[in-house]
Image (tube, rainbow, N blue to C red; front, side, top):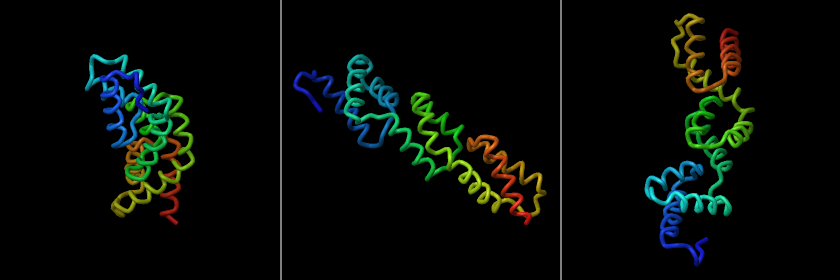
Length: 163
């Protein structure tokens, strides 16, 4: 990707960006922040390099968002509200976030129900039903699930438990 007319500083910045991307995928904003921290007087060059990385598909916010969501779903499941917040913090734009979250939307209900079933096993069987429901609502809400998803997951699980 290096060209003959690149300055020595651009090559150093590009090399640093490639090292960062070699560890894991990053959003464009994450790379920008890391590079500006390391090379504070070279914002113009950093912008040009980020553009080149995007043109060569080495930096792709849509791919980053999809991979991030896949990783989180398998390591520490969270609801769409919390995932949206996390992607915003990583500098991903709203349209890219919306597209990535649309892909995982169908799995949210099953994920919430699965978490409720797991959490229910840790709650005392002596706990009154209303207290169990309160704890389960708080648990899923803290994980960033939307209220309608939480309500359905809790109600279905509690009803199944009583049968």
